[in-house]
Each structure stands twice: as C-alpha cells, then as structure tokens.
Amino acid sequence: MTISAGLDEWRGWTGLPLDTSGPATVPGALAPVTVSLEHDYAVYVEPNVWVRHRLADKRPTDKENYV
Image (tube, rainbow, N blue to C red; front, side):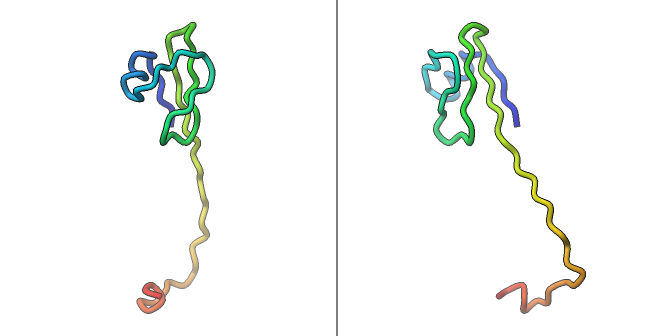
C-alpha cells in the first residue's frame, strides 16, 4: 500500500510536525514515512507479505476443525 500526500495533510493525519526531510516514524505504522520538505510532500509505502499455501488433497473432518 502506498499513500502519498502533501505535508499539511500528513500533519493533519498524524499530528506530527514532520519538519525534517527523511524518514519519519509514525506511531502504529509498519514502515517510516519518507518526508521531503523541498517538495512539500511525504510518501508511506507499507510492505506487503504474500504467503502461498498448498491445499491438502483431503478436507479435514468436523472433529479436526475444532481441535
């Protein structure tokens, strides 16, 4: 997920001053927000994890589902 917006929006969302260019830690975020004072802009890129599961040939019984 990527969220890009102007610094005024980011300041409103986060309540942080975001007064330094570079990575900024936002409480609750999985990754830092990259701030650019020069461009009056910030970008957040949240990492995604894709997991591939192999499906079993046999479906579990009701008893196995509740163990």
